[in-house]
Amino acid sequence: METIITSPNKTVKIGPDHPFVIIGERINPTGRKLLGKEMAAGNFDRVRQDAIAQVQAGAHMIDINAGIPMADEPGILAEAIQVVQSVVDAPISIDSSIIGALEAGLKAYQGKPLVNSVTGEEDRLEVILPFIAEHKAAVIGVANDASGISHDVDVRFAVAKLIVERAESYGIPREDVIIDPLAMPVGAIPGAGPTLFKLISRISNELGVNTCLGASNVSFGLPARPALNATFLAMAIGAGLTSAITNPLEPEMYKAILGGDVFMNHDDNCQAWIAHNKSKVTEGETGGRRSRRSIRVEQPTN
Amino acid sequence: METIITSPNKTVKIGPDHPFVIIGERINPTGRKLLGKEMAAGNFDRVRQDAIAQVQAGAHMIDINAGIPMADEPGILAEAIQVVQSVVDAPISIDSSIIGALEAGLKAYQGKPLVNSVTGEEDRLEVILPFIAEHKAAVIGVANDASGISHDVDVRFAVAKLIVERAESYGIPREDVIIDPLAMPVGAIPGAGPTLFKLISRISNELGVNTCLGASNVSFGLPARPALNATFLAMAIGAGLTSAITNPLEPEMYKAILGGDVFMNHDDNCQAWIAHNKSKVTEGETGGRRSRRSIRVEQPTN
Image (cartoon, rainbow over all chains, first blue to last red; front, side):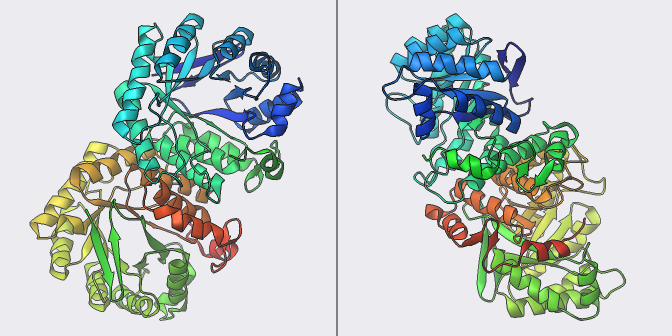
């Protein structure tokens, strides 16, 4: 299986035979009030900076979310996409649940984007999937439905299967559907880890599709979140995860991903690992990267 | 499956329903010339200190190796065991391939030890296994035979199976055999990671036995070894690994193990993770622990 996402100058391949794909999570006003305020006011300086910084830090793609209360989401999303495409080649994940915003985003986007996301809810499937098929985009299918997020592996797997099959019925090839098995906060839901690893494995092996998840919320409410997130991501990669929406500016997270590539045999002669760690000025910081302090100030607080 | 190892005052349970078991690797003269010299001269001060430091850092068991060229291995091993048992309650992994040394070690040991190790070589099986059965010890079976270490999952699995079945034929219950699937340096053997994760999973699921490995050699020859080892260990724990011979004094390694317990649902209410990270004085260092600098000076160079 291989999901192909493009921009005019870059093609990203997601799949079990490729290095892990990092989708930079930073351009998202959820928990970043200042960013949301600026975007709503038509100031995209921070969006531009965040796109560049994430790509420099190792992001292969950039997620863009413009969900700002009381604001013109379609217009802001479209403009953010144009701004990001003017400064980086990385293909984009267009992140909205509003069909009007997705329409505006897809119209503005140059290339084949990833649409983030559709759930297994009937009314969402009916609206989003024909739209994905029409635009020949790829889509993230999130493994919950109208009944919520089940703690039962079989139930959540069934939702994933439904999304993949329904997408096919609309003419969307299986390789253009990426399933998000849903990473739950482990502090609140004790069995979240084993459930998730089983889901990743079953979705990969039984449905033959790629997987993606938001890798920063698993540690919600716990101390030392970057270290915990990094351990989680390493385990998820081992279980077969092929992409994540995450923050490559977190040094521990980025190391876990590069290390994951080494042990999945996706880093020829360990070149990427060696290059990353030889260029280090001090532990946990690379030359071209913003300091951890400046990143942390802006981090989502959720 | 549950492997039980004991000392007079402590019982350690290894298994998929228990927190990951850390067997401290430090008391091993391989690559530690000064330690070897001192042990050969009858000076066990460093052995004593290393035992205490590893237990304070989180080791559940202590591995003791006395393989010093031209020295009296049986006598030194027996004395080291007595010294360690006089200062810590942690049960011991008696590490030798020499039957005379194992005999002396088992005679000196109080409790039910783990013997590290027997390979799948016929002449080793015939000598070590009856001895394990007689002493009602547990044993680590290493998945290589006279033909060497195969890169083929099926071949290495067959060696593991042979060891487990042969042990049973000598009356050693399956739960007293722990298989070491052999972690190879990923810099030299590109497919080492996927091979190993598959082996851990098959050995756990198909043979129903516990697994253990030396987790520090996978990164041989590569930069940033602690970070790479930590990522590896997280992935191996996710694949089902239940114990490792490793260095809990490495903060990144210890965090990966505690994080692994969180995501395997082996840390009730994340208590161990919270306690470890709340007690931190500064990132990567805990109050009661020796500084990283002093540890690094003494690290094995292999």
